[in-house]
Each structure stands twice: as C-alpha cells, then as structure tokens.
Length: 322
Image (cartoon, rainbow, N blue to C red; front, side, top):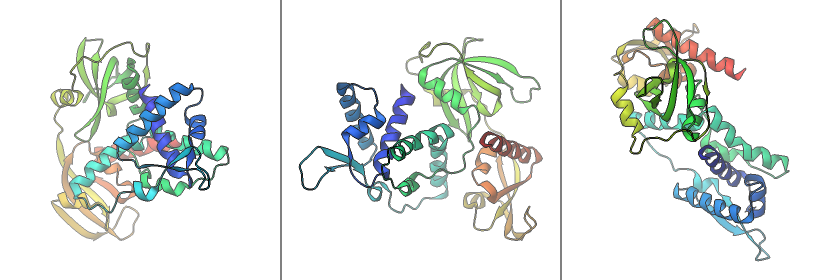
C-alpha cells in the first residue's frame, strides 16, 4: 500500500502539473482512482491533496468555465512550484544530489510518466516541459535496490546471495528488511537475519545475482522503536580511504576540486584531447557511487580497483537499459 500511495501522489502531482487548464474531479478520479467508490475516492483525494500541500505543492482551485459556476477544477502552476534561484555550497549540493537518487531511481521514474501516458491516450493536451522541474539525472543505484525497497514497504522477506568483503564465495542469506539507508556514500539494507536470528546490515553493492522476495507480504513486523540509521551506523564497518587520481574536465567536478590536494591543469584526457585537469585527493576505497554521478566528466586513473568498479557499474547500467 505504501508503494501504491507514493505512486498515486506522484501521478497526481504530474497530472496537475503538465496540464494547461484546470482538471475536473471526475477526470482525476477516472485516471488515478479507477474502480474506487465515491466515498473512498473522496477520502483518498482529500488526503492526497493535503499531503501534497503539506510538502509545499501549491494546488490551485478554480472554475472550469469562466461563464458558469460549475464544479471546481484543480491544477499546479509550474511557475509557483519551481524554486527560485538557490545558491548552495559544495557540501549542500552533494547532500541534495544524494537525496534525489531515490527519486531518480528507475522504478520511481516509471511512476512519473504514468499519468502523462494516460492523459495522452485520452487526447488531453499536456505540457511536458513542466517536468523539467524534476528532470532525472544519472543514477548510481544498486541493481538490487528495487527488491529491497519494495520488500521494506510491504514487509516481505528477501532471499539473496551475498559476498562479504575479502571473501571468494557467495552465501545465501535470508532477511526481514526493516529499512534501506544510505550511509557514508553506500546503500545498506537493515533487518533481521533469520538464519542467525540477529539484526544485521548488508551493503547492497555486495549482493550477488538477483535478490528476490519470498513469503507473504506483511509476514513480519519491524520492532517498535527501531532506528534503521542508528543501527547502520552501529553495525556497518567504518569506510577506509585511499589516494585517488582523477582526470576531470575543465569547469566540472567543483566538489572534487575543493577536496583535491593537488591539481595539474591542461593535461591530455582519456580521449586524447585537451580540456582536462588531473586531481589527486583522498577518497573512500569504494567511491564509485560518488564518481559515477559526474558521468563522462570524470575518469579514474588510480587506483585500478576503483576504475574497474566504475567500469563494471557503467556496464551494468548499459546492459539493463539495452
């Protein structure tokens, strides 16, 4: 139900945002709340409107016809929803970038287009340029993110292969997931390891193969008072750091430049052309998530293990999108 509600709120936001005119309640009900009774629709629609408004979304109510006092319609004006120019420090921008990765994940990106597809099929004129407010960017999420995220929402156990740091073999693990957390630049899932009957934290980048949900939804409860972030901080190992050498395009990677111990300007890039700088800095030994966010503007020279991990992650993205 949590996933359905999130997608419904997102679809309502997109539906009211892309239309040039007010949308009637009947049309909203037909597209986003099909099959619901009148009473159920009224309750859900009122709750959804209030929840969006509590998040700062300005839902405007107006007349569908300027000449008649008919049933009111609803819309969201892009100029009212868009933020004014905001200047962020490098650290603040990095935090915003991490927060948007969940929103940009493939499963949620699908949901953002559902209302637009339905409106287009009905021949309703839409203005998709309004969606530039939440334009997706390159995401560095783990392939198993979807399964664990959904399992947390509907409280379904998960079975997956896992390879611990330094191990050469994969073991099968069974988990009742309580939450998915990003900590120190990595994604973790927290829950009850039913094989050992202990709370455990697993790093998603070490999940091998396809994770899958097993059992019935709602088959377990999260212990009252559980703080998944505090549990992650307590159980996850402290990240190690290493010397990293990067080639960065000119005028890119401002946060990386700020942390660099040295910058060699105007070097030959990996493409054999000019317009690159060489940066030396200290980063986590597994900094692939951070560096992937810069796309083609950053190339890892050292260490070789980090470069190989970046190549592997990019290869996975290409194969999944093919």
